[in-house]
Image 1 (tube, helix red, strand yellow):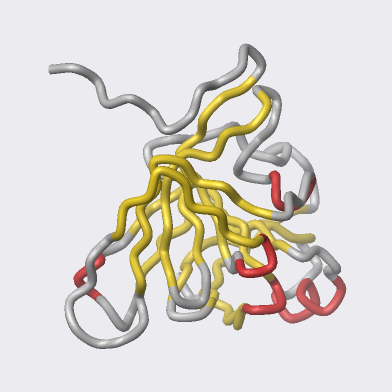
Image 2: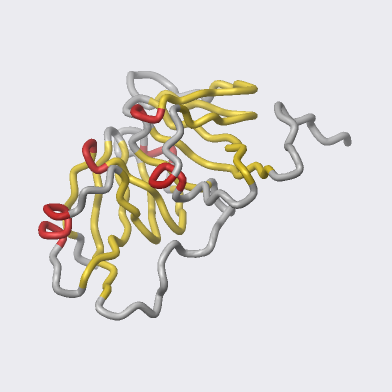
Amino acid sequence: MAEKKKAYTLAADEKATPAMVYTLTTLAWGDVVTKEMVRVSTYLRTIAPDYVSLYDARALPVRGTGPVQALAFTELHVRTPQVIALHLLPPASEPPDYDPSEEKRKMEPATVLVGPFRFDGLVRMSTIASLSKFLEITTETFISLYEVEVSQPGVPSLGVVRAPMALIRRDTALFAPRVV
């Protein structure tokens, strides 16, 4: 069987990384095309493009009533200010964006509610900080959440997505400590 033709052509210095993008009303996934050296799992914190462009994309509206059905697009462009969360589409992965041996850092379990989505994971912070203190002093637009489990409580049939890391837009999120 012939492989399906991609909706894009990569330049010699580009790569395609499968990712999931969350907005207040939609869950979308597809390939993000970037330069080879760009880490898609952190690029909203570093490059901050005007749009997150997904190729060979699917979009699943998660608000409203009735059955949910994914829509297919060769290209889907999401304005970055609309993005409330982003992570690589499993099983894609990248190396951690931190040094695991760094002293005086801890992983604090947290539940983060972002729009209709629930993210359970770990926030990396100083060993002397609490979640509330961390949130009080951070100025990042996107906060990293590690060992993430994502669900949509309003549509439990979507199941749980697990990812090593997600970026969460701080200004659209509710944070709660989680007992594990």
